[in-house]
Length: 84
Image 1 (spheres, rainbow, N blue to C red):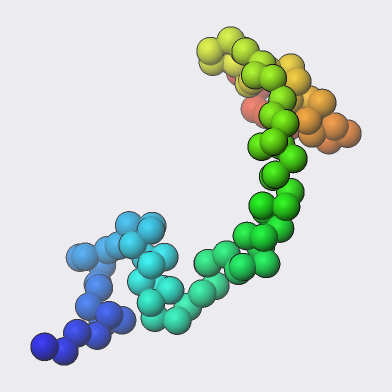
Image 2: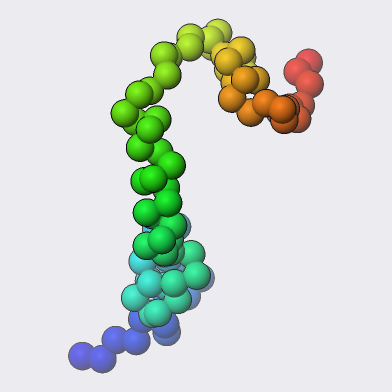
């Protein structure tokens, strides 16, 4: 049996996101895959947060989240749509 991955999937058999990602990796297209140095940097940046997590801030259902989010992104701000 001969199976060519690149020719085996048409629009009728469209792939879901992770299926496509895995297929691209198998075919040698690594453009959407994270490189090892990126994974290492993520671990480096997230380790302090994982070792000493901030307290959970409750917020009202349907809101844009807790007030502490403003401190998290300062000096920037969210550009959120106005609610009606």
